[in-house]
Length: 258
Ligand SMILES: N[C@@H](CCC(=O)NCCCC(=O)O)C(=O)O
Image 1 (cartoon, rainbow, N blue to C red):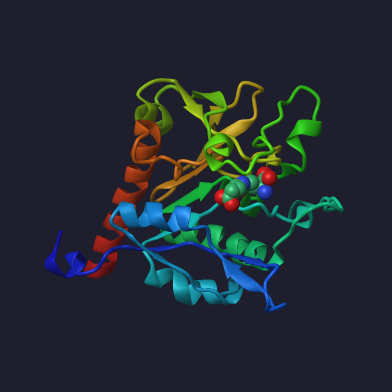
Image 2 (spheres, helix red, strand yellow; image 1 turned 30 degrees about the vertical axis):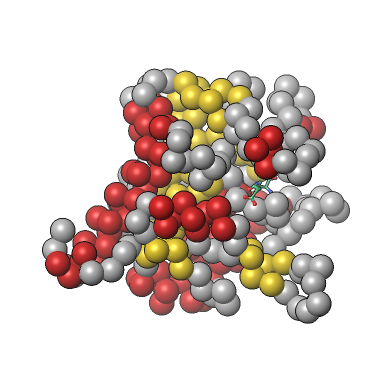
């Protein structure tokens, strides 16, 4: 690593959510679960937020960072992005949608490492022209992938099912085999795969749970599970995150040398 590149930690952009919280200020709040930012810090990277960034800011802000981590969120990608009508019960976040749709495309076009987790995977899929099941559990033949109704986070994030991993894929390498156990906290899921996405991890009901972007210039993966949870003690999750972190470091090097 060159001395210049070593001077700063690679910067990882985590697009935040925008919510109305039951607090004194009735205005909106910018929200990011500490869990994701902490995982990024533990990898030796620096999480950054651009709270007011919109799609129009992406060309100016993306060159400042070394990676993008699209986090999970209780909110759903609005179905109008894949030409369906949103269900009346949907918790939506149009500002996040607008930003992440542009960010996915720009990160891939410019070779910025991109990792999507849960909603983040769904955003990658929709940004690339794919569609989602709005309620996986309502589809015949598909399982209920939602977390149990409890406030106990350990129970919510507990391992829930196996995933089958494509032989020879990076997922299989990170898992050390062609199966792994994962947690599951989502109501939506990939229906039609986006352009250029290769399905490489599958739930027992066949739902696509892990993708890579074909011919990507840098790390470009998405997972439906949550590797940020217990990533330090789970070798599969740890290797996935390490690969992302390495890609961010390599991107930092390239930026420093340019
Ligand atoms: N709302 C979507 C995405 C689910 C998701 O990202 N869950 C994570 C919840 C915990 C967190 O905020 O990290 C769906 O239901 O599929």
